[in-house]
Amino acid sequence: MDSQNYRPTMKELPEDIRPRERLLKEGAGVLSEIELLAILLGTGSREATALELASQIMARFNSLRLLLDATVEELSQVKGVGPAKASQVKAALELARRVAQYSDLPRPVIKSPEDAACLLMEEMRHFDREHFRALLLNTKNQVIGTDNVSVGTLNSSAVHPRELFRNAIKRSAASVILVHNHPSGDPTPSKEDLDITKRLKDVGNIIGIEVLDHIIIGDNKFTSFKSKGLIL
Image (cartoon, rainbow, N blue to C red; front, top):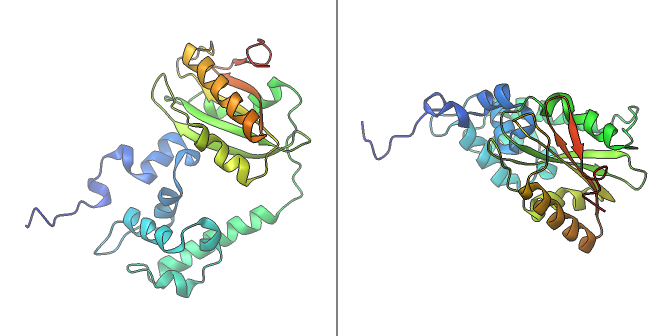
């Protein structure tokens, strides 16, 4: 075997970077678009793993918006993606389109820190790493989206303002509520939590998207910066 040309298969990759294993362990929300697409593809080709095929598809169409409008024929033009894989992807995207158009379900309205915490408590209190999310709100404080901003380590989650506000701007959010968990179960804010909140609050004021609160999720309990007077 030529070691220089050897490429590992998906099964030979470490479990913590295999999309399917990550989904089972951490939930679908933490996966990137490429990882989700790789799961839809199921398998790769002789020349590329499912992850590499997914990456090639995203490079070809540049965004989910353009991918959503792609035909089976256009998807099949990506090397390694035949009609069967293209059909799988197209079917999943069509389901997503129909869900997005289903508007009968009322949007949650945030009237208190408890409302925000309850939306994410049951899922986030079980994470073994810090996950940083943002609830995107419209002018009526209705939730128009939940943005998975970053995944950190056991006791920290690096958050850059650019990552936080990118989707908020795209979705025309009027305000955001920051939410992250403490795997220790103790929702007491750290100095790092206080510092990043102030930084994100300042950036939000500049760009016109108010940071209303920062909720820290513990083990079936939470801390609200707004309630504690830690955010004005």
